[in-house]
Length: 222
Image 1: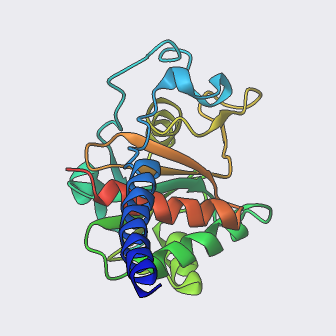
Image 2: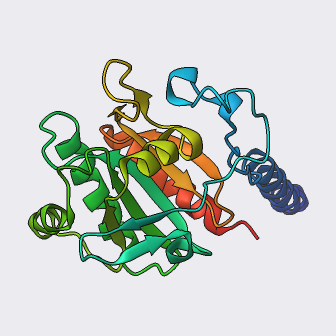
């Protein structure tokens, strides 16, 4: 009888060890690192993409730019060199989706405040209204940290081209001037190579959680 229990104990230990190994293998298999997609113009709704690049299937990157932030400082692609960043389009007098988007950007700012690899970039789609002084007032009201988050204004033509040819994120008004824009709720996640790695609904809290998770995935890329 004692021999039986002794043999059973050995079997139980061996079975337990094998079970743990099998569970670990299954867990690791199901949790294999999955890189984020690299978005190309052909992968995005045509209403958000300039007609000249709607056919492009590869090599898409954010173009060079030169804009002015809330402190009157010139902001270029070099400001974001070797950085992961979240970009969006807004305007300070917007009373619909912008306040929600801004609140969510503030949440992201809190999460990345001590992370030197991550920044934020918000472009005004009404630069004729959102001059430096207006952006400064808005930034102070919302608690924008200029070390992490630039609100930028500049030439409307340049912002329009960035919106539709680089970030693939803004609709063409169609009934105004040649560079009139209708911004969307999209937040774009940009990697260190200036590639778009994700689109998120800036008004949706669950999407913000997903964005924060995807930032961590990007940080694991070499």
